[in-house]
Length: 95
Image: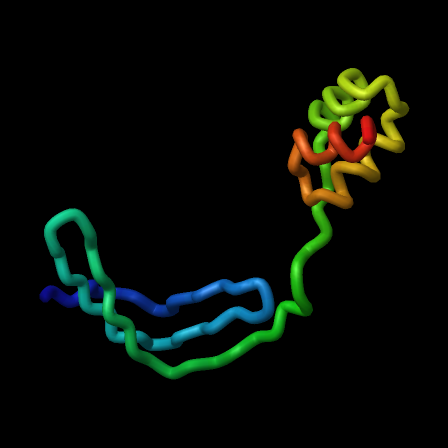
């Protein structure tokens, strides 16, 4: 086990919140096939308000529109509904 020097802050980000550990003590343990970190510090919690809305990129919108014969607005809405899953968006518009 060895200490990781100079760490000022550690953040653990979940869908609902961000756990912030300030002035942490971080220990690193090398085990066969993995590295384990042990972290302790002053905890602060920030609420994130849930998931961010997915914004599809233009390439994905065009691909879904071409594959389904639908317009780009319909393709964009479908991609937002399925959070970017191309196959699901195509099936949604074809079904």
